[in-house]
Amino acid sequence: MGVVEKIKEIEEEMARTQKNKATEYHLGLLKAKLARYRQQLLEPTTKSGPAGTDSTFRKGRILCRRSLLHCSNVLANCSGDARVALIGFPSVGKSTLLSKLTHTQSEAAAYEFTTLTAIPGVIEYKGARIQLLDLPGIVEGASQGRGRGRQVVSTAKTADVILIMLDATKSDEQRRLLEHELDAVGIRLNKSKPDVVFKKRTTGGITFNTTVKLTKTDEKTIRTILAGYKLHNCDVMIREDITTDEFIDVLIGNRKYVPCIYVYNKIDSISLEQVDKIARTPQSLVISCEMGLNLDYLVSRIWEELAMVKVYTKKRGAHPDLDDPVCLRKGSTIETVCNTIHRSLAPNFRYALVWGKSSKFSPHAQKVSLAHAVQDEDVVSIFTK
Ligand SMILES: Nc1nc2c(ncn2[C@@H]2O[C@H](COP(=O)(O)OP(=O)(O)OP(=O)(O)O)[C@@H](O)[C@H]2O)c(=O)[nH]1
Ligand SMILES: [K+]
Ligand SMILES: [Mg+2]
Image 1 (cartoon, protein in one colour):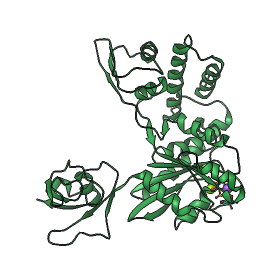
Image 2 (tube, helix red, strand yellow):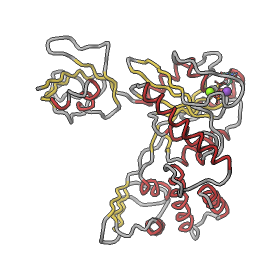
Image 3 (cartoon, protein in one colour):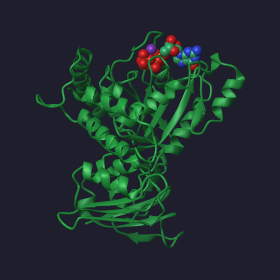
Image 4 (cartoon, protein in one colour):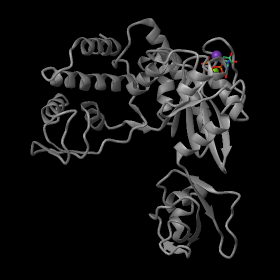
């Protein structure tokens, strides 16, 4: 049996199993198994590896390899300070949006699967270059290899922000399906990493500690899952009221926690009452690409979600260079600033002076080392050997 079939079987069993106290451990085990198979599906396949048996799956994989190569070439050539990925069903208007917000033209048409590879464009905003990535439309089952879906959802993993684009004229079922596909490849939308410390050991058995009361899972379920993973020696410290799924995420490890905005397009075709209702849903935003409605607001919301930090550099005796800021992820250090400017800087670093919010002596400068965390609007002077 192929991995896809095994996944299907477990999903069916889970759907059949009633959720109650008695089945909780069994469900926990099934969940852990499911997570492991889904993981296998994403790993590079070998001849003896998990092979799909039906022809659409095989065809999908061959196509994927080729388009993945293509994708990565395109992506390497087009750098930016941050990356935003457009995920949605066919014909919701992803390419139309890319053409509206960037100088790149991506073909848009009324038929499905117009876009077949990743098309990057650049939004220039507040001095930053934000890469917007138009991707092929995905369909249900994308994460299991239908169409180019697996590549698309995996590309989404590299994004700093995901835009789930939806057709406002269609049912909201599309939103749930897309969330499911992203979830299946380990992308967690609008969530933060569970506050759990997990350490493997070679001996000593399992030590289990919590700092909060667990209401959504319990020690027995967690021990069952650990046994399922053959983890007999480890330390578990849970500091948040997590679910069983969140514990499995910690075990598997390579989950991506990505902010997401739900973008409902084509509001020119629905009633004002409907527009109003959608606009009030959390993390949701309404636009019309065709009529150019709300597009500026969308860009400002993307900017907020990216939470980027801008740092100005200053040469000794000169004014800071306000035209060409260095744009960084939140939490970046002086070392990141150095590496963004030139790779020779960090190895020859002596010290830096910072002015602004991150300086202890603000409004005066503080002398700092490579590990110093910068903040938005700081001014930095770097001194090398
Ligand atoms: N009414 C309306 N139609 C729109 C809007 N935006 C895009 N469209 C139309 O929707 C159709 C699909 O647009 P595309 O941009 O090709 O959609 P896509 O999501 O890139 O589609 P695929 O690449 O096939 O996945 C085109 O006919 C567009 O003209 C909008 O705001 N309102
Ligand atoms: K289309
Ligand atoms: Mg398209």
